[in-house]
Image (cartoon, rainbow, N blue to C red; front, top):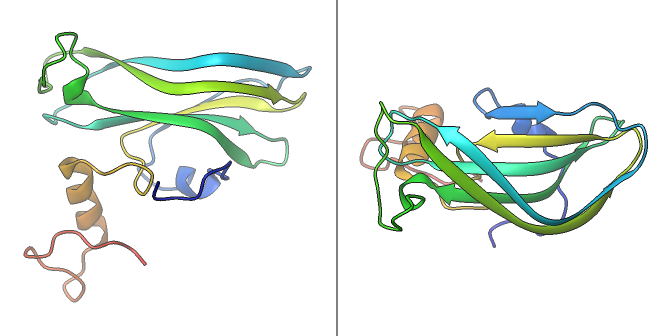
Length: 155
């Protein structure tokens, strides 16, 4: 694994300008325990031939901290029912199911259940070429990178 295990506050990544989508429930009136397998099914459409989809289940605390509980990712071209690699087409909606794994967690009263959907989870999962190019375009400067060295790891 490329990052330390355990809950991490998601506020720094959620603040990025192109982070993704965040769905947030109402504050819970009482404790709520969930247990079992967590899966997220999306209907997606993309102008990229391949991309990643990442789902994150987060416990949003009353103090504003957004603690990651569990996450999962899937590369779109490998989710076709045939099991064969299948490129996305811009005019086609695909069904994508992301398995986040199993969990047993109690959300406290006053907490909110949050679900984030993004297209990358860099450092926890390898980037697709699409994400790597987007990262390079955001970070490259004439002195720090050139087309011959399109991707540098941030320090």
